[in-house]
Image (cartoon, rainbow, N blue to C red; front, side, top):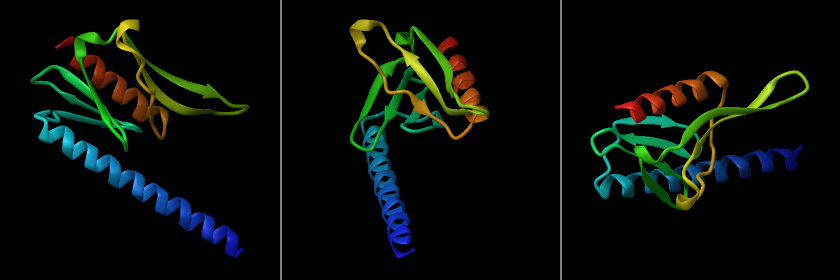
Length: 125
């Protein structure tokens, strides 16, 4: 029982530390002139600057910024389990010359679909 409690405390501590590092990266992104018009959340965090027509993926160790026009496609994906779907995410595809972006994970389908819809609207502006 003590081992389980220690593991729970360890995972909670690591999660908090990871969150703090991501917050620091978001602060650095904003300091670079990126204005967060829309925060789509997710893990890693997905944010949009509508003025500059850019989006950024913010993780605990870094952030990457791309023009919204560079998005070739964006899709909501999930894994099929035996009874339910899981691992809901938005996958953003760029041209091969620009590399790959880590999928942005969400807690549930509704949040993933909302983020996808908002990203698609920002791309169309």
